[in-house]
Length: 128
Image (spheres, rainbow, N blue to C red):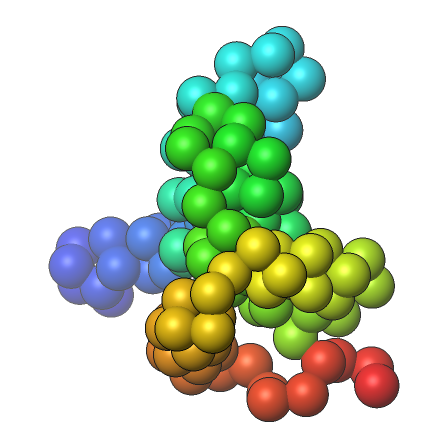
């Protein structure tokens, strides 16, 4: 096996560990009260498709913890959490939606669908 192939094989084997690093770092920062770092790490993990981070990120946006309060982004991340099987996400998604104007909600739904497609999630919540 060539050196290039060996390097590629090592990288492929390390990818799962690298993708969970953001979530684990977020959990650690959250436990120690470093909400800004927790937000950044949950966001990085969520953008990589770590479904464990979807609801956590939604909550930070909903309550403005470690970031500015953003009901549209909370709606999106809780929506993704709901589609991933998070049994609490729908209620929080609906709470965030209640704070949005009809125009803001429509834009948030568009954003949710873009992320849903990016992450290959079904249009219906998992397990329902």
